[in-house]
Image (cartoon, rainbow, N blue to C red; front, side):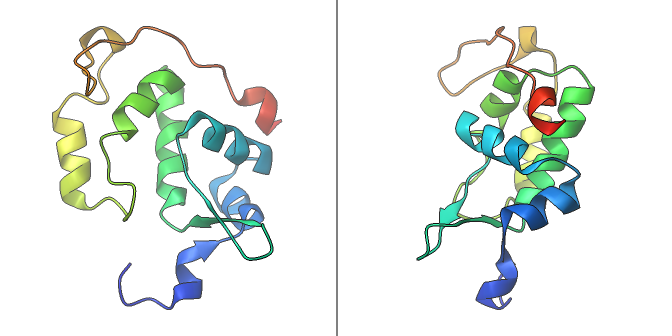
Length: 125
């Protein structure tokens, strides 16, 4: 996303929610869990980087496959926080078994996760 105007990179919550097909409250829930991040404007309003759309799509697809939000967070924690993930990052994420079941998962601490995250279904309805 380098070379884009500063304004083009950041979206308001309503824009992200509409494009991603989720409720704004779902974005807030994902942010509370640490799955996505936002920044605050001078007027204390949230803004999300445009690549948040990809993360939300990944979260939704992963949940459809039965992957818990805790496991999704564990996998996303390995992606860069200060810049959009590149093809290389996604390939590494995939190759490390990030989309495998929880029993075969690895975290940065080396421990497996078996807890189930709460469903945002209520937040998005």
